[in-house]
Structures are given as structure tokens and as C-alpha cells.
Length: 213
Ligand code: T5A
Image 1: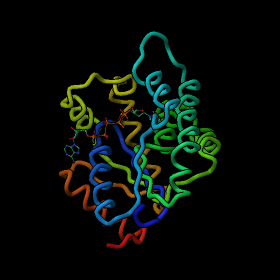
Image 2: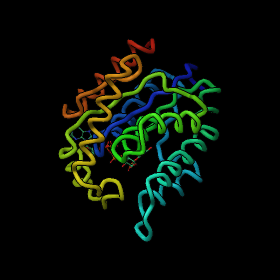
Image 3: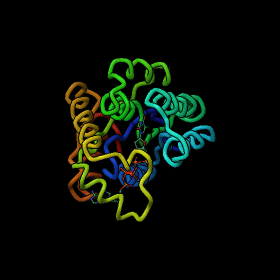
């Protein structure tokens, strides 16, 4: 195994903001420097989580109420912490997670209206109070993000299909979270070319987490 430096870094933002693209590149950079690194995504990551992901995103046979929705996202998270994130941190990995608690707060807590404080408390329970060391929020006009996902030639999922005002609320929620927690959350202008986004995030990782070549 490579260099040990247990860290949890999470990636947040609206639809098509560029999280997966960014994570792929950061994994390569960490591996080039011989760090032990693992990546995962939410919802998903575990067998249970992937089944929950299908229920949440890819079925339209029956409705899912907002409380059921939040509990399903958190089911995926709790399992992911137990099976993937905690064991990897315990063995010294840097874990890069595509979405985490801030998604639940922005999408369900604020945009869906479940309530911010209640959602934060439920998230703390589900993740056993495991906070990320660093979080990047990729900030992008949802019109542009949805345009990018359309170009990927995939069917929109249940949440992507919600109207634009929902996605605008999600964006505003993330901006608010970044303002409230500047010690953890770095807001990145995701309308820049991918290379600029990657470099800006890498610089923040080096500076804040003392990653060394
Ligand atoms: N959700 C999730 C909740 O409601 N609550 C929760 O608690 C959680 C955990 C997840 C859905 O679930 C919701 C949020 C979501 O609606 P998902 O399929 O995982 O669904 O959706 P996303 O995470 O949004 O994944 P996407 O693939 O849609 O977006 P990404 O990963 O942000 O974007 P990416 O990297 O795939 O890029 C999209 C396209 O843009 C290009 C890429 O090449 C790609 O074609 N691109 C750029 N183009 C121009 N400039 C750049 N800088 C670019 N960066 C990438």
C-alpha cells in the first residue's frame, strides 16, 4: 500500500457540475504521489447502497415521500460508512466521496423543505458523526449543469427531472452552507474549464491538508 494519510474529502454540487470528472483526475494525482486512495459515491458504493440508488433514482412506478426519500439516502450512507469509508480511513486511505451529508442538507433539508436542522441531525446519526476533512462545492448555474448532463446522452433520473426552481434552491443552499462553514467547505467556480477546476482543488488540497510530493 502507498503512503498513509487518512482523510475524507467530499465533492458536492448540483447536477452535472463536474464532480465525477474532478474525482477521476484527483485519484490519478494522489496515485502518482503514491498515496493510498479510494473513491466512492452516494447514493451507492455498497450492494445495499446500489439497490437503494436504483429505488431512489431509477424507478417511477410508485411515489416516494420526502421523509422516505431522506431515510433511503441515509440508509445508503450508514452502510457506506460501515463497509467502505471507515475501514478505508482506518487503513490509512484518502477517501474521495462523490456526495455526502451536504447533498442531503441541500436537496432534502432545504430544497425539499424537510428542515435544515432536522436533516443535519439525521445525517449525524447516519454517519456516526464522521465529518469530512475537506469539502469542495462545485458551484454552477443549474441550466448549464443540466445541459452538460443532457449531452452525456443518458436519461434524466428522478431528481434531475425536477423543475429548474428546485435546482436553483439546491444551488443557493450549497452557497449558504459554504458561507457558514468556510473552514471545511471550499466553493469552486465550476463554469471554468475542467483543467482549471482540477488545479484549483489540488492547490486547496495541498495547502489545507498538507499533501506533499
Ligand atoms: N442526492 C444525493 C440527494 O438528493 N440527496 C443525497 O443525500 C444524495 C447523496 C445523485 C442524485 O441524488 C441526489 C443528487 C442527485 O440528483 P448522480 O447520478 O450521482 O445522482 O448525479 P450527480 O452526482 O449529479 O452526477 P452527474 O454525473 O450528473 O454530475 P457530475 O458528476 O457532477 O458531473 P460529471 O463529472 O459527470 O460531468 C458532467 C458532464 O460535464 C462535463 C463532463 O465531461 C460530462 O460530460 N464536464 C465539463 N464540461 C465543461 N466544463 C467543465 N469544467 C466540466 N467538467 C465536467
